[in-house]
Image 1: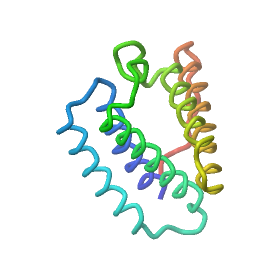
Image 2: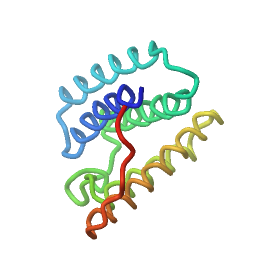
Image 3: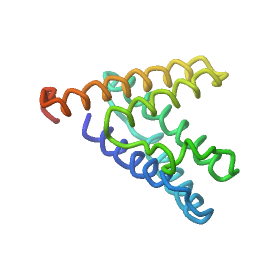
Image 4: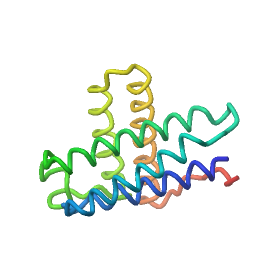
Length: 147
């Protein structure tokens, strides 16, 4: 089950990475369509109740990414959010930047469940930053075996 959720996170990560350079409007529209397809599939997923929390977190991340795409399409994203000054990558700084952005979105969320979900995503990004830092220092974090 975790592998199904992780597969969707990989898809979201690919879309997010495509936003690191200032994408052309056609690229943004293509990524919105791709996100829409992903969202429809995720909404139709039937998982055991034990996986409800990761599924809601995934849905929150989809909402966050949709907001980033809207900002990019409207041209409201500042240069600091793009690769020109500080790219968001897989390293500790990239994960911390994602956490910062997600917390900002959570503060703006009107829906309490969405706010809670986004804060959980931010917490997970911070944990990933810690793991990336540990890996960088030569102390790899042990991972649970995959499903």
